[in-house]
Image (cartoon, rainbow, N blue to C red; front, side):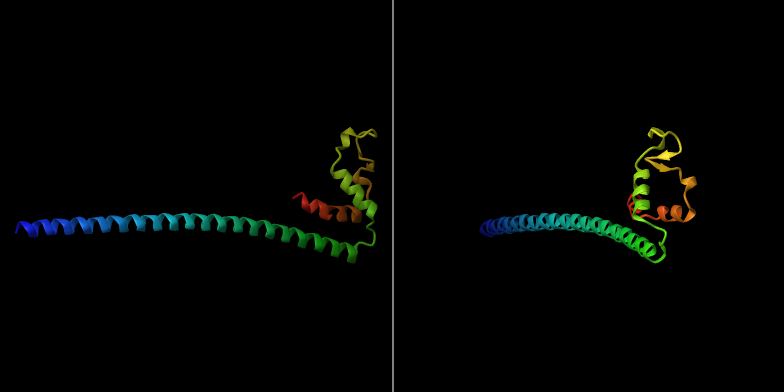
Length: 131
């Protein structure tokens, strides 16, 4: 009976040791999988942000293409100097111009420009990029 008790105790210790070793192995696998999951989630978030940025660029490019198409189809009165003047006036405060108020970087106040020129200037592609 004593031998049987010793044998069962030894068997119990062996089972506990194997169980402990298996638990350590499974915990290692679990940690590895959790790390892999975190990396996958981070990669998914990065790809989502990249996709949103590309989608935003696509929308802006489509708007720019539409503007150019509109200018090519309907912009007989449009000239490159109009585009350059509009670009310069967007970057220059009128109060600091040597000609005083009513001038914007050498371009006369917009009240003196044709409504067609004003309409075209409102839709210039570089103004779309500022949005």
